Amino acid sequence: MEGIPESIFACSIPVSDLSRSVDFYTGILGMQLLGETEGEAYIRRGSCRLILRVSDDVGVDTGVYLGVDSPFNTRRRLIDEDVEFVREPIHSPFGTYTSFLDPDGNVIHAIDQGAEFRI
Image (cartoon, rainbow, N blue to C red; front, side, top):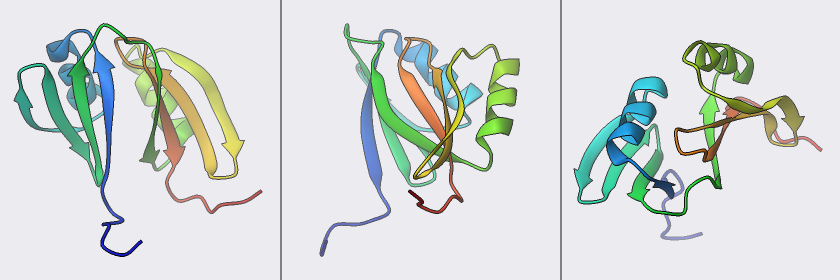
């Protein structure tokens, strides 16, 4: 669509403890902290930008799919970090992905960024 940048994606994720979530997303997932305000933290990984927002409503499927080189390798690495997985790697039309929980029980997905769309 004309006038809308294609390379920026932003999503808000509800969290109960901002500091703990920033530690998870930056320390475990390797995202970059851009800044914080009262009740919110702004992080990014590539063109994906996330807003961690303090909320009482946590434990949701965020719909966030982070592109990774290999969902299988990512899963093994995150299991070593005691991250809980809710879905083994599976194939989808967009590529292979796996799903895990952040500290608040929000579901995050890791998808093969190099996969081609196939039905």
